[in-house]
Image (cartoon, rainbow, N blue to C red):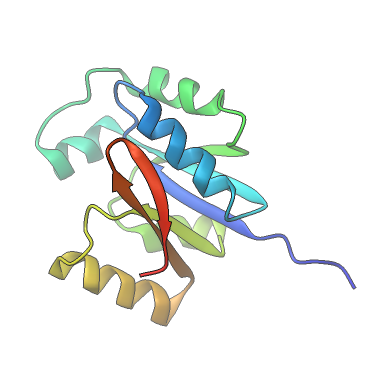
Length: 134
């Protein structure tokens, strides 16, 4: 009997790459056998945050691609994670807790759990990421 490979997915802008970015990628990799990372395009970042990243997309993509915890990097050119899942069929989506407790976060987790994959959350604390099951 062969063990199923667990494919994980996380996403971010990864502008001005710092230790928190590295920590979430390392911790995300610990939850799966194969980690796909979506680097958010400039256009989607502007839609989400109202401003452009300081580091150009191609450079952010190449930086994330060079991280040893990352198996594959893809552009995140949509605001809809279901579109990304349709293309990559990951088993677990790994997120920080910046939406935790918000209506947007509750709706997000409800959609993820009930429809297409499970979601794991890292608690962001002083630049470090701690795994949380909530």
